[in-house]
Image 1: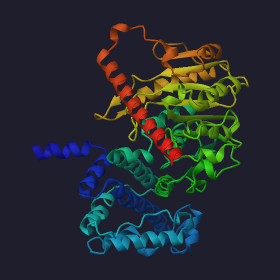
Image 2 (image 1 turned 60 degrees about the horizontal axis):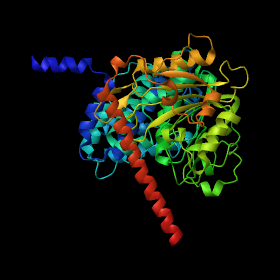
Image 3 (image 1 turned 180 degrees about the horizontal axis):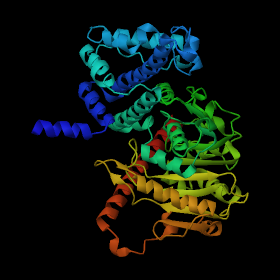
Image 4 (image 1 turned 180 degrees about the vertical axis):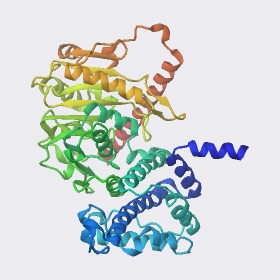
Length: 515
């Protein structure tokens, strides 16, 4: 009876969770940061092999349009937008080698062979499978029982959908397993979904200059397809300075059939070596690293991107904002994540830059205050900025800014991590769209949202913290002191950590001066 219950629970559990449990069980003593390349690499290999095998079978049958075609002709696969997989890299071949002690070498050779045959994948695929700390029995089980056990049906679209979903889920789970380091390649899914739901990138150029593993692009593509749009109506442009993360992005996008040719990598990053200098994007969706002090600001004091003031060399927040604005088309919009300190900071000219963005540029459309514990790699309080280049051209609210305080939203999934629920995302996006278009029934709601005239923002010295404008909710009876105290305590502790970091940075700079 107990065994039957366990079996039924397993059937009810989503496929991706079953796979994760199986893969994680095999991880043993391998670090999550290393193991992710093994598992995600195999998922990608399974995807391209499945896609190849579908076309290969049709070519072998030689019926209809495929009559007389050669199943080993690379051009046949190029015509179908499918990667060509040479015999030694095909999944059935690897399964036949799965019980051998040198299975790792076979997989590394397969990755090399695929890169040779498909120039767009050159330098992308992991070759980490022959390492000594990876047990060949474990690797064989991953090939045959975990990744190889995924049931897809016959259609390539089904395979891509399932594997893409599994890949995305595994990225999130690996990020959780890595904790702080995981946040470097992964923006939590609920934040990405909120950004995309508010921006609605139906058509045009979508840009992320610090794109991590490509989650913003994947969610944009999902949004278009879920709203009966055409995926070819959007094109993506990205840049990533960490090559390992860029490889994850390339695989993540390829498995979704998204053209990643304009997602570039270079060591210098978007400030020093902008890979898309002439791009004017319709949508920018980004989560740049918070409060970066070593962004080479001293080398860029006279840069043409700083139209609203030179950002401080010790903090990149306002450099990122101006980089985004520089790349926006005349009617382009941006949704970006920043440390909450950017809403109030007045140090090193940041207050003047913020004032210029609001008063001179009239670029700030909406500010969303986020709950604590959403991010894996930082406890620094965060917020969303929505920028709009077209506010002065017929925008129904061009003389106002919408402030949303979402700090009380979200559900805890464990002691350290919170996620925004689908209802949270829907509620926030609905308020923003009603306000922005003037077509809905927008009204201020105490404690949650307020449409504030620019004159009032000026009175408060261009401080953009939503709590200053939305006030407290009317229903004080529902006020949960314990929850509010816990949230404020977490925010205060994060600010203390930030203070310590800044003090250490000041001490280091003083030491350099003395030296």
